[in-house]
Image (cartoon, rainbow, N blue to C red; front, side):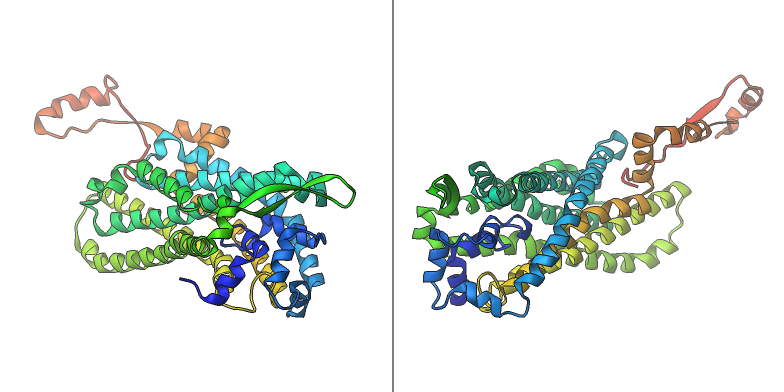
Length: 430
């Protein structure tokens, strides 16, 4: 259950639409409408009736002014769109690389699902931004844009973003299992069928956020110039049961965001502890060169996943902590005293999450030899032509048994040759 003060704010339609527990700050439909000064609608009347003083006077008494926020928001919007396009291209490259057969492994399958979810998430954001650029301020009155915002921005975009947190936690768990229980790992469902597990998580995320589009409906009204315009209004289902909708919103945030981000940190901590416990035993064991190479590749995989997931958690904290605080602070959030401070921090948080879409690619390139080689093979094939010729070598055959020594001279004289290609083995991610 959420506190009474937080529940009262959640009851406000504009706050619920904009609150980042339901929608990313950059895709707020209600906020755009309010910023354009459309005060003569049912939504704003609802808000004003729920407060003793007008929220539009209250929000200007905070520590951040509207002018400061608008200036910051304008600059960030100019930067954010090209970064979204670049991040989309980078994630498409990740999808192509992880789809290659030579990259097939449990770790790569989960990372492929992560990249697909991020690619789809960025696609929905870019499409909405393009519509805003084409129609300008009038976009908030266009029926198609409102329907898109209701079923995509409020539902699909949020579900896709949060399923990304689940996949980061999942890949951390997979690495923990591989490091701590190497012998039992192959028999576990997560390692045997990672694609099935990822699909189930995707379905769970969309089912867990199904309540979001049920809150609102798109209705028409007559504008000041006697034209027909459209806006969002509260649905009858939401009006009758606001408390349960508010609890569902908070529960989904805890399950799909905070619990998953915390899980990433816990699994990474357990991995470090497990590595330290087994490091002395591994050093004392006499292993072959192939076994040592396999252990080294496993360690590189683990380090790559640890670094990338921890960075994702750090970059996700501003936006989600901002939303968490707004649920329990009467003066912090939408249409309260620190209105513009809340929006400013939310914008910074969205930008930090956008940066996280770039970091994984660079970590994979820097730390993953297999990812780097596959990327070059797929996107820069001319760079591998010379290396491919060098990788295929001819060597003299050496007999394993005493009975085979009479064949040595025949091999060395050129009658038999053993050709091999140095492709590596073990974990396909690195």
